[in-house]
View: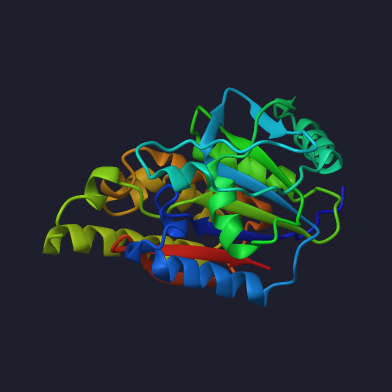
Length: 268
């Protein structure tokens, strides 16, 4: 099977609906996402892997008009009035299902589930017209990094012109740390993890085996791994993105989100 090299992005999507509420801690993120969308070719469809959906097998949205899931709590009413009326793309969902099954991965087409905020918050910033059909897939609730790289490798085989694959997570995701005062130690831990992550994803001197090993064993290889990710669901969309190409990223973007050093990665 010929492998397609679909454009692939990993984005740090911020805290709940705050990017759309004018929150100061998300202004740079909103700016960078808008710039990113303006610089790449507008896709025919988007396949998105969100940190906010886990399942025992790989679930795939297959409805023509998925609803929105407001899976955040305690925000102003306007947060629950956000609209993003993009369509689904059943043909793409079927293709995703086919290529994943072909590599021995267990899947399920899900015509009931809607799009969670890992999809509609960043895409409303990037493509506010909501005129690009979308399909969302779940993480595996095993949270095994090697399995998620395998998912990406399978997705590389999708036959679909001008597809954009998006991993929507967060390169730093310690919820308690967001609401605690920074200290020299916490700043250092955040910075050293980010430095490791950027090098792992972008260093052209690493072999494919070395890069894959670092990502698979991130918990022991990365400095302060469990401070930055007490639970890894926001990091694993990056593993899926890497799996599509299994090469150094074409570009990375460093930025501050909620006063934490964070990053985006682009493979073209």
